[in-house]
Structure formats: structure tokens, C-alpha cells
Length: 208
Image (cartoon, rainbow, N blue to C red; front, side, top):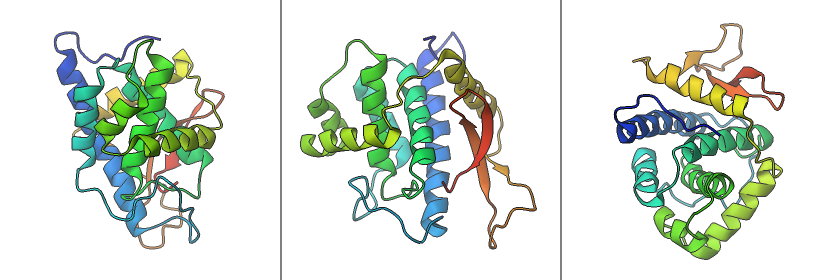
């Protein structure tokens, strides 16, 4: 699979920009779902913490980037996995109580799927600030939540890369408003890019 590239002169800065974009997007999703949960009955799983982590999503991703020593593609694939997970688990919307655990789980799975050489679960548990036992459970639950659908086609990968590259060029937040006919109960619904199993794209509500 091709590597994710924005410019050839400074790959590290490219990844910093990608991390900033993804953290901004995920933070907006989490904050939206904190205020406007999309389901009255939501699953309480191992991904849910009792309190909000004190570390920001951006700092968390920067920490992963600093210590993981993985290929840049892993960050894109981890985002793809998160997208798939939210589609398959509508009763587990991403919020401030679970986004960090979902991130470290998606990243661990993406590294194992994408890279030939990677650290063990104990190492990534330390990076993520959790115990090895919890890291193991998160990995298993995330895999089952995905239905073990880990393959990412080249076309799907490039679709997500193109989406991220395009949105990073926009100065405004990488979100668009839903059609005015949508029932929003007094709030503005937000959408983002998703890819169907057949590779076609669509817009999906963030509160999934």
C-alpha cells in the first residue's frame, strides 16, 4: 500500500499536520456526542472511562507518533478503522469518555496489520497510559467491533487520503452542514467522509 504523502520536503511536518487535522475532527465528534448523544440507550463497554482523560486528543496522537516508530500509513488506516467501528457500533458513539481508548485500540490494530515489525502490546499500553491487561482487552473488543474486517483496499486508502488532504487545505473546520431538511432538534448536524464496503463514498453524521 502506498504511503501517505502531502509534500516531499518535510514528511515529519506532513504527519504533524495530519495529526492536527485528525485530532480536531475527533475532538469535534466527541464534544458533539457529549452534548447531544444520538441514542438514549448506549453501551457501556471497556472503552468507556469513568472520567475524561486530562490529556487532549492532539497530545495523545502526538505521543503515539513520537513513540510508536510506525509507518505513516498506520495513522490513516487507524482512522479508517475508527470510521468502520462507528458505523458498525451505533450504540457506542465516540465521546470524550472513550475516544482515547478507541484511538489506541485502532492504532494498535492498524500497526499489526500494516507493519512487519512493531512493538508488543505492553509497549503500546505504556504509550497509551493504560495497563497491558486493558490493552489486550481493548484490542479484542475492537476487533470484534469491526467484525474482523481489517483489509483496506488501495482505492479506499487513497479515498481517505484525498479527503484528508483536501480538508487540510481548507482553513475553516473540516466539517460541512447537513441539508436544512434534516431534523436537528435545535443543533447543527455535522457530516464527514465515509467509505462503504464497496468503496463508494458517502457523507455520515458525526453523531454515529
